[in-house]
Length: 465
Ligand code: BGP
Image (cartoon, rainbow, N blue to C red; front, top):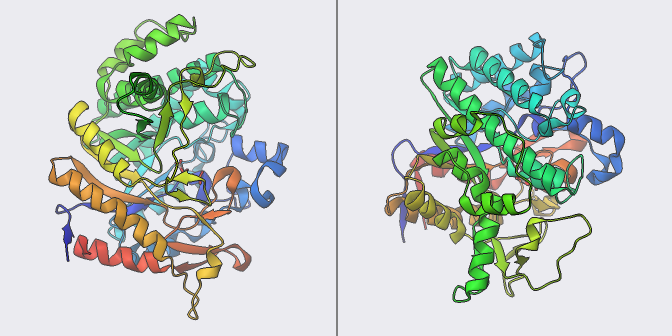
């Protein structure tokens, strides 16, 4: 038997986001976000036509939920402040009901001994700003910085871990390259401008936060998908993987931690004549305002081979002009989400951060497994026996442990997610939580087997195997 013991005060918890959990309540004063409006425009794009107003009702059930977090061993929990709830029009007036809600939510968590981590942007642009171009428009950067400042002023006395963005590459890929979020464009020039504005907004929020001297830390949460070449000994595969890595990982990791964009990417962007619009001093702001802490979301690796298929010119240049995705035979899959499961990836990321990013303090901010049809695992006591989830977490934690033994500065592990929640266009198709949510029974919560198991891990700060 091996005992996996984690460092003292290692953070055990989970992550969620405002738009995926809070839901709407009559008279809550929330403004419309991109998701609210997109759902109105195209409900058929959402699994079973379940929209964002029907998320897990955390807005009204948070007190009960915090008790369940406690019961499942949470010492920390990350969610996000919905911009469109706090500032319904994106700029201007603050919604007092949102202030009351977030204040109480935060206070209850602290009272329960759970440290709140707050993220500021989780794909949820206020609609009034989206109508003016969203992240394409420089004005959004200014509006975001005001929003961030407002959050720090209102909640920064109690929240000591802040994150500027969750997975900022997702609005780029999903909204402007591969059409899985609104506005579903395929336009690399726009994608680059959006990415640039997000990276800049993050540095500006870091600057404001540090200037306020609130005695906490601020970082960014990135979904780092390690790029593995099909064949390590084939220079063309290796080069293609490096380019994919620059596009999808280093595009945000390098400016956030090192204060500069990767030279490989700058070269490509210049060659394509797609240098984003910038203002004087922007790059100085990015250089001087790097993060204190890095959140790492890890679900799947990216397998890459040298470009073999013909370049598709239909929509102008694309990142995929430089590489092909490699469909590796025999890979382990989560069939419900269609994502490869490769546990060692988590170790490779932590090693990369240790070796190439100054071993910056970091933590696993998301990792998890979405499964469809979990009802079939319900036992006679009404509990979902999700042994596969326990195995998934253990398999990843072993690698986190190994990285720690080798000197990684990883401070904690957050599962995605606490309670089953609304997965964007997948709505409630795949369930990720330690706690089941029964939509047919007014969102009734039931702790799954994995939630009970996680409590034991948290209590003993590790597990035996
Ligand atoms: C991450 C997001 C989360 C969450 C999770 C699961 O990319 O930060 O918001 O949803 O992935 O993915 P999905 O919901 O697409 O199944």
